[in-house]
Length: 289
Figure 1 (spheres, rainbow, N blue to C red):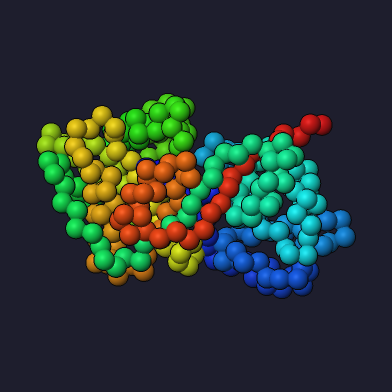
Figure 2: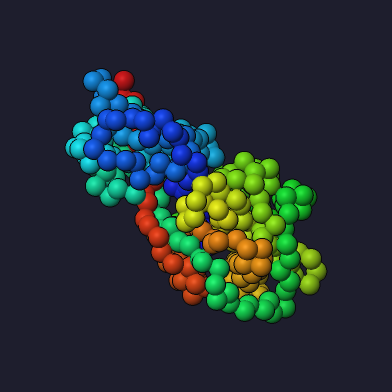
């Protein structure tokens, strides 16, 4: 049940430079995101606003792309394709996304953002397995086991398949432990263990900078090994995180889930997560020149 955020997947503090920019007829609705950058035309007119990152594969990434209302979407798309050739691009603007697809972009992910207000926490009692806290040190120590479970959860053909192999999944776990993906790992993270102490799955919760619902405690990933004989592992992992956050006074827990992963969305809804918004991530065509 991938819930990672990027496009996922990174709202954080406002860049004051945008507040001082008089160009454009409306304020950037995502001004609370980090690294906000203006892409202007030769005359200096604000055409696109975005946050600059790199994806886990090193691909440059324009996230949270917004088109000011006084800018023609197709003109903005032309500029994006020229300026960001070969980049990944994420936006909640369906008109922009369709215009980019018409210009040769390839859809990578259609995702739904959801949030839990940390009220009415479900009572989920693990049956035959244990759910315990997962801190950064433990995640590093068991990165191969947890990475292997993650790899098994997202095999080739799964809508959230990402890593090339188990080694890549293990490296991703280590990056999460180091706070290099969205934010520092929180003690609300959990791991499920069978009676023999083997890893069944994990829920990685990070502190994503910025105001709720775009920031704060955030499920970076939650997964279970599909070969486990135990039922309810994913829900128990999330439930443990919800309870820990509620007891600690956190305001909410957010996540992003892939549109094609309907089963995961149903699980989140059943646990009390509410929809917030949609976004699309596309790969822009490479520079033909």
